[in-house]
Length: 234
Image (cartoon, rainbow, N blue to C red; front, side, top):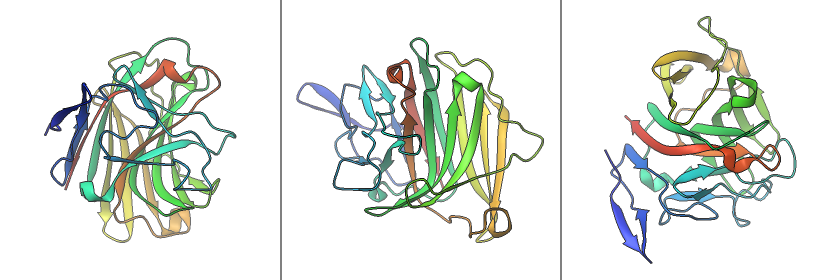
């Protein structure tokens, strides 16, 4: 379901969608990203241990902000009031504007947070390395567990160009016990990961919000981002 757009100050902005769905084309420019309050960002009053500049949007594309170290990725999450449900499919369309070297963009699934901690499944797209990986963020800054590939996948995404579509999914294999993450590039499965107490040492996350994030990779942040994002959950 498409998000309803309203016009404020001459720019279209996203309004809150019905529970279970959301979409945006990141119209206009904002730093940090807000879209009329839909996004919660690390703006100095939240996620105080995460000192990265929050994600922003410019000319209809969302980008990761700058960061001070390799583990201070910029993050923004759809507010819990949006009502994202546990089985989640997030579709992002890529924008490529030039050389992106070490730039990373992220999709976050089943995410919760407080003032200093983030708990999330991160799908990390690194087009300079032609790969997507998955990590379980487990609270404090720099605390994460890299999930192993399953199902014979390797995370290989090949060359990424504008218009490429990534579908990112999370669903229960056994509720409360194990979950599965998947990434499809242009409908082809490229990455799959499972999580359970046995795999990561902690119970899988049962629910949470959708998020985006990034690592600036130097001065090339605006050369790789998300042109649009849509969510379907149940």
